[in-house]
Each structure stands twice: as C-alpha cells, then as structure tokens.
Length: 328
Image 1 (tube, rainbow, N blue to C red):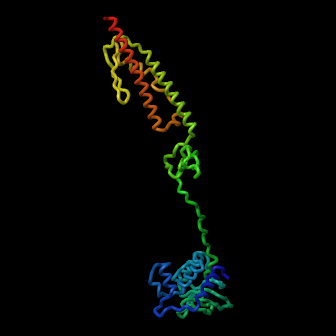
Image 2 (image 1 turned 120 degrees about the horizontal axis):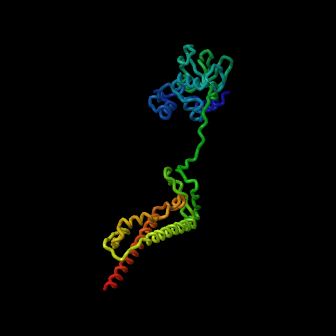
C-alpha cells in the first residue's frame, strides 16, 4: 500500500456517492477554480483529476500528489519526479486510456487504486457516470501509475529568527536590564540603531573618561606654558614705532606696539620657532574624538594666546610709561 495514497483513499471513501449537478457543477471544480488555477470555468469542467487535487488538500499531501485538472500533465509530473511506473498497487494513482494507447498523451481518465486482484483493479474514480464511485477495471486499460510515496519532497528550510540587527561594535556594552533603566549608569549602545557603515566607538567607563580628560588638559596646559616661555624670550625694547594687530579670540582685536628694532617678521619667526601645541599621540586622539571636547580645547588654546598678548601689551605700555617719566 502506498502510504500517501492510503490517506487519499480515506478522504475519497468519505465522498463516495457525490454526484455532479445537472449543469455539470461540482464542489471540487468550484474549489479548484478558486484555490489552484483561479478560473471560474473549472466549476463545470470534467472533474476526475480535480477531485484528487481536492482530496490531496484535505489530506495535506498535495506536495506528494500534485494538483492538476489535466490528466496527461499529472502523469508527466509523476514521471518528472521519478515516481512513475507500471506496477499496480493499492494507493497508486492510476491513469487510463479507453483507446488502448500506452503513451502519456493517450491518457483520458484517472482514479486511485483501492485493491488489486490479479489483472483486475478495484478503484475509486471521480466523474465515473457523473459521480464519485467505485469501479472495476482491467489492467489492459492502464497507461501507467503514479506513486505518491516515491515523490521526493524537499524539506522546508529551517526557520531562522530575524533579528533585524545592523552591525554591532565588538566592544559594545550589553543592553541594560529593565531594572537598570533610569539609574546613573554609563550610556549603553543600542545595537539596533548603529549604522553598519559608521560603527560607534566603544564606550568607556566614567572614571576612564575623567582620567583621559585630566591627562589631556595637563598636556594642553604644559604646551601653553611652553608657548609662553618661548615667546617671552623675544626682547622688546622701549621704543615702539610700528604696530602689529593680533586677531585672536572671538571678540578681541588688541593692538600691540613694537619697537623699531623688532619687526612683524621677527615676531612671525619667533612664532614659527615655538611649538603652538604639543602633538598628541594617536592613542590620546582616539580617546578624544568627541567634537565638543575638541571645541573646548580650541577655546582654551585661544584664551592662552590672548593671555600672552595681553601680557605683552601690558609690558610694552609699562615700559613706555617709564620712558616718558624719565624724559620728563
């Protein structure tokens, strides 16, 4: 017994005695036109094979039996799936030719084998005398058999969980537990919103951030002290016949009088000979990528520059005042 065909037989037995309507309508053709081929013309069409499609659907074995309205196409389908032969057995789908032809193109009718008795087949056939009935057939009328159990059905692909996650940095902190939300914890990385082409830098702990900030400020302050010391070596005589205007800072333009012996070019040379800001290591720079932080560093540098020039201006003004007092 073909195990898949046995399930078809159980459904077929439950429908024995069904008769088509006077106009040729059957519920099996109506179902086929709505669920398989989407064509209302099947409603009153020959229904021997459409019944098998309906029964296969009810038994949940359509992948092993196929669903057809054309009997030659159905036989070709079994042949394509290497499930075609000429040995009669219960549960097999049997294809007939009343003309005695033995090619698939000669097929005119189909049923399902219920029992085999020598050269006699006992079948259940739809559209036999316009009804679903048992029949007795001689094997000489058979073109061939389709064996549903021999059809190899590909296993359904394993279900995979769709995380819909984009790229997550290797060192991203884990998502906080529900009870941690709202507590004073370092910012967490949401792996669902990190752009794959622009991975976020790994977060650091608050103490580490404070230590890095302190170290960088120390480097900057050391550099500005070196700048002030270097520039203080420029000798500024008392007389100041020319003026240099330094445009530093956001709101200040402070004139500075220079002596005749010191030109603007001399100051530029002194500027070039001093280190404006120490070169930060690549590691320190990576720790300070935040643009807002660097903005603050830039403002600090400008403030130090202003302090230097303010001091220089005060010194020149004091020297000028002392010279005037001596002359008077």
